[in-house]
Length: 175
Image (tube, rainbow, N blue to C red; front, side, top):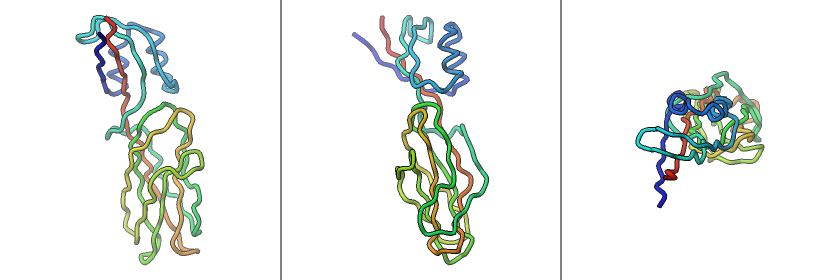
């Protein structure tokens, strides 16, 4: 009978727990692998286990930020921020949305590879408001923030794109 165990830890903890297998450690350090498979011994209560997969899980651990301000003054969505994802997983994505003019609305939306993916977010006025969504991305996909303004010629703004998560390594007891 097989017992399944899920261990979610930060990358440093994962690396220190798997130092006996050089190839697995190298794969984790590379961070751009979709899955890591190997055998390990002596991890906590597991006498023998197989690493099934590695990916990211949403958390409040910051792993990437792009804090610079971007803007657009058009009323159709325009891509303003873009990053390439390097490991499969669920990520907590946050960004600040606001407008340069107090009586206008900014609209922002998370896209995946140029296709609308997240929920449309909006913010009326000049004060910053942080928008948050947990979304799944695969290695190599583009995570993008698209932005538009409620009024042509008036700037909608986005800044503080932050990606949160931590490494999740999944083990399956095989003995």
